[in-house]
Image (cartoon, rainbow, N blue to C red):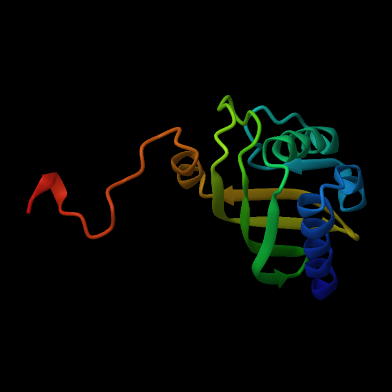
Length: 149
């Protein structure tokens, strides 16, 4: 069962998130699914998830989501992923920058049957905002604090 659930998540990332088949989201999530950590502005249930995925897809039309690692136990799957894409449309109030992002993240999905009932996504939001130029990047690695030589 846990191997099947891992395969379902990989298929969702490939078909919906990377290929952009947002209408297929209901094949993987229950209609009354719960997003434990909703994206800013995300509405409830499957409808809210689909709206958010549509917004992400229009901002990053070349999005690619790749699975780096998966761990499954019981009815839960943890997926560590990399999301990359070019910022070509408004996203979280940030106009298109044409910058390429590469963000790490993890999702914990709880299945009921063959579909996800609840999900929790944890991403490097700070890194994403820095890559988009919305906030300044930290000092270069190897830099000395306070401008010391």
